[in-house]
Length: 269
Image (cartoon, rainbow, N blue to C red; front, side, top):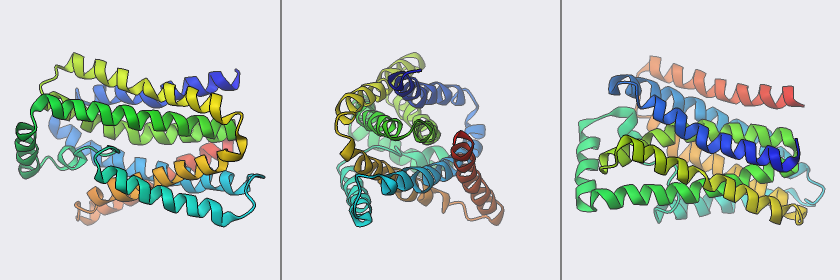
């Protein structure tokens, strides 16, 4: 396969597959989803951190275009702060109301219901779709940048994107359904939103392939994105499960996520 074919294939894998997997997941009764979703989130945390620290950052630092490692680490720092600001502005929507889906508490559900009423159901659903489209577009850029650096890194990056997209898409579906969308319309609009991953990947392929010196810094931004999502959006929700048995499961699943990325990266090489 050509490099462009790899990029398009895994951009679709990271986007549409996660939407379809989430839609199947929603067929599970609410009680089952409430039990399973925290485990999926724990695995996603490990996959994201593994991809950032074992894949993206080493490749960025080893690039011949990087003369000072501080440039890469500074880019990671700027990326994390930027994602924080964007999320504050409700543009970067990685973890929409994930707590409600994980914990299913009456308080969260009541709050979300009132929140939806205050801002109109449809506009809340539209906001989620717009946020997703932007998020997926950026994911496509990151996947393409990884493939332009190394095909194996691209595969690992696409896997990490898919791992954290599935629990996020479950939350998105829940919000869309609550906003008055039918199941078929929620699926259709989520699939359309996921196609922006391919648009981002194509844009990156044609722009970054002629500007290879920027690739290490795009990889650093990708790493900061993965680190931010794992640490700021996903981990806080796990701390709300205080039982020792749950904590052990979380640790095991996070380590499993890291291990899968490590083994995949090692086997591909």
